[in-house]
Image (cartoon, rainbow, N blue to C red):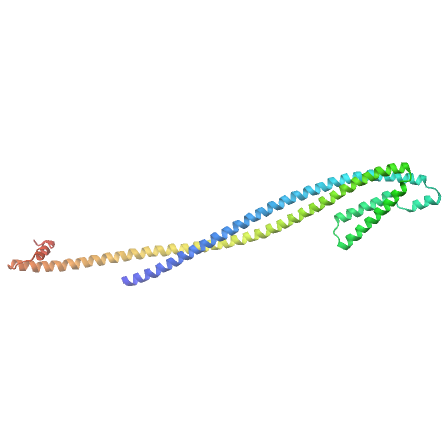
Length: 293
């Protein structure tokens, strides 16, 4: 019976060690998943922060575009006013067929308005490279027409004075328009970066969620193995108690048997002593231990 219990205890101990090893392995996996999840969460936070910074820079650039457009438009309006005065002077001074020829031409104001509209389209609309090249060529053509008119107008002193002033306004407006284009491109750049950062944040957030799921699954499996390990340990303690009891009882039984045997031997020695036989020192010690003398 004792050997059977010992064998069962041995198997239970092996099972306990297996659960312990599996628990430790799963806890290690859970820790690794947690580290990877935390790294992805940190990356997500960084991507969101970067996206927010680019959003702020985009909005600032868009505000700059709006402010610059207002300044550009003010300068263009001043130039247009002067061109209207120039057109009026041209109309007053033209006579006969020359006047009719002038009337057939679009005014400098109309030409500039077309240029402004085309530049606005170039800046705001998405178009193919071919379409954009056509737009640029059209703007160049209109600028050439505008320059031809200005050369013609310069023959008149009163017109020339207004024309010089209008050109300065146009020059300033053109410089600001270049800034508008630059700021608009910068706004688009930051917008694209913002979108990319949010895309990366979504991807890393999905990865973090997946790692968290793996962490939870590994942790739950480790808890289950630990529970099995504890149950094995409890059963081992029960086996130990039973085996200890059995061994203690066997020891007592053995001790009783040994005492009976020693008592019987001592009685034999004592009877020999009474019969006058000579006893050895060992015989005397046995009698003392048996308390017969």
